[in-house]
Length: 69
Length: 149
Image 1 (cartoon, each protein chain N blue to C red):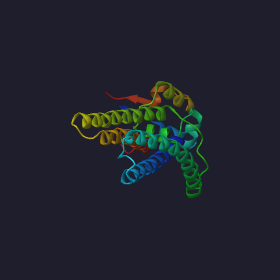
Image 2: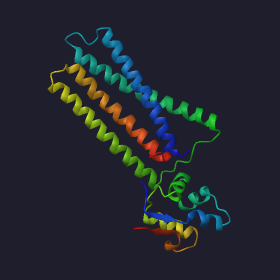
Image 3: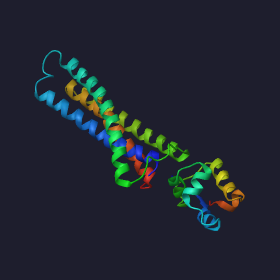
Image 4: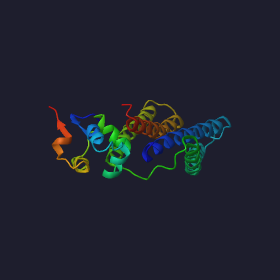
């Protein structure tokens, strides 16, 4: 399930007082394994989850995710 | 280890145990001549039905035991019963692999009948279709969950 979408979640977590993957997972209602897969670009997440992650950081979607052709 | 990863791992172990139990019983009964008489197919069917009931009970017992063992080994409590969108996608992929392999091996059994092999051989191949499909589906799920593929 690799994806063309890259993300800045790792950096945003670091900027957000070094939020752990488990903390982010709990905030957006997924498992830590799913956050790991998203960060590594191994999982193409749903639009809904993408919005939830962006909102967890208080950022617009395009600050977190970028689509590459 | 997430709830679904643990489920996949437990599924593989219990499936392999149940398959071993099936193979052992069928070969033992076959060696004892249970499938030689005129009621051979009825005897085979009764054994399979009995083994299905036994395997359900064994699966429940093994699941409890493995959960306790994993808890002792890893020091982790049971993971929260959380199934997210990635887990559901992986479940679907596992189910597709299971269906594909079960159908393929089942057709192999039908092919054996068409090629004049014994009905007994064909029945066992058809039964093994479910075993092959289930185990491969569980391995696929675990591989996807762990990011191996």
